[in-house]
Picture 1 (tube, rainbow, N blue to C red):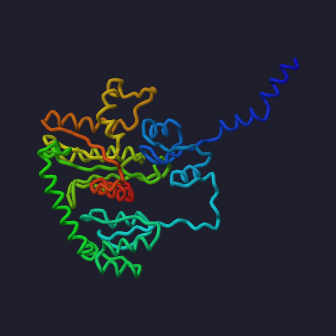
Picture 2 (cartoon, rainbow, N blue to C red; picture 1 turned 30 degrees about the horizontal axis):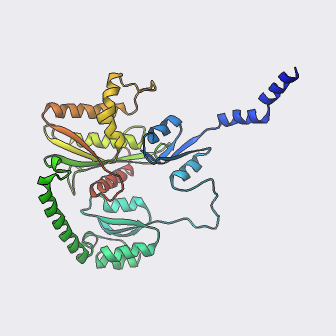
Picture 3 (cartoon, helix red, strand yellow; picture 1 turned 90 degrees about the vertical axis):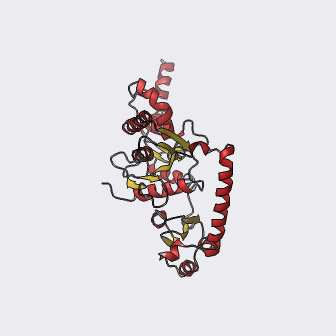
Length: 345
């Protein structure tokens, strides 16, 4: 009996109670680096962002605020000194719809969306941002930035005349080299007769209640087919925005044409080219026995691809590394970010 009593004591002891309490505590899963950055409420949702993603960075937290802080690049387990100032960011736009130094991404995105050849960069100090302006902005924009002002019109669109002249020479030189290499195995030569379009999705507060997502489709400067819209319906996730952008791109190109969709979403490419076949055979049920998420968008994309194939067209995909100074990808990203700030229709 003594042995039995000891087992009961341990089962009802502090350690066991602590385990039961911990099991009841909610967990918030923060994905700092993965397919879609954000805070997730279930381990399954978190896994979808990190499994198979090289270099994924994630962690669970007892509070949503700590999880969001981790996503934002902080270490919530190490309390910050109350005397340490909040790190400001300075966005220098040397060429765009408006030129100057902005203090938030929303205003920055609005100043470059739709602009021809925008030139911008983020800095930790105003001095660095100002140095960027002096190097690349027009003299009028530099004077305005020094006074803390923003300019628009030709003074914002032109940039530094000397730098622009040098850029044009470099562009012409690259174009000549590419033209000469096209016949000798250039990696994009096979897509020369494709309509090339960049797509991207953005979600502010992705994975959280109240998230706002946007869709970006970029065919080229001032192209009427470009899209910058708020994602319709729920949930407002980054993945749904990415898939919607691809669907919109397909819908804007005649089905008898060849199209190359360039995206930084490997998830979307896998959905359209790998996983959809398996899901269709299993009646759109995943390997875990659950209904496939976002299947309405994936199925709509497959319908578009099938119709294009029947009409003699071709659908091709190309993955690019996001936020890696690719002009087309950055333009699509800016359109998506601007779309996320619009009201839902």
